[in-house]
Amino acid sequence: MSWTERKHQRLPIESRVFIELVAAPAGSGEDAQIAICKTMNVSSHGLMVALEQELPVEAFLQIGVEPPRDTGSEAFYMLGQVRWCKPSDDPEFPWLAGFALQQAEHSDISSWIKLITALEPGS
Image (spheres, one colour):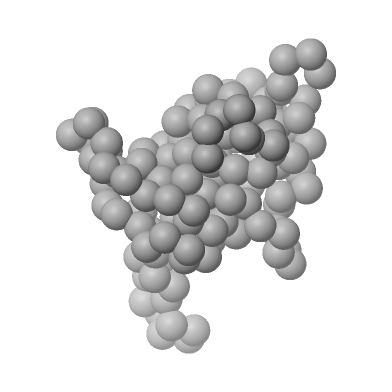
């Protein structure tokens, strides 16, 4: 999809992101497998992240996003679907992935949409 086809404006905001790759079995006491990465840009309904490993396209993953600085918000916990994943030129983060944020029970997506909409130029 080209930038001209996008429904939502992208903002060049860098935030730390936590992606749950593998959930811990309930009651096991084990830790979940978490990838720590960063956003390259965000919109009210999506994220582009830079990360250390490839993600399976179409996978639904739990995401935690630290808020942009100076917003006074707490972390946002949302469900995202991997729409694409491709190699990058950055040796620290050799993969880029695009997430479509999904409506889900107990998700912070409504608060995320309000925050990002308020940060868009002209708001």
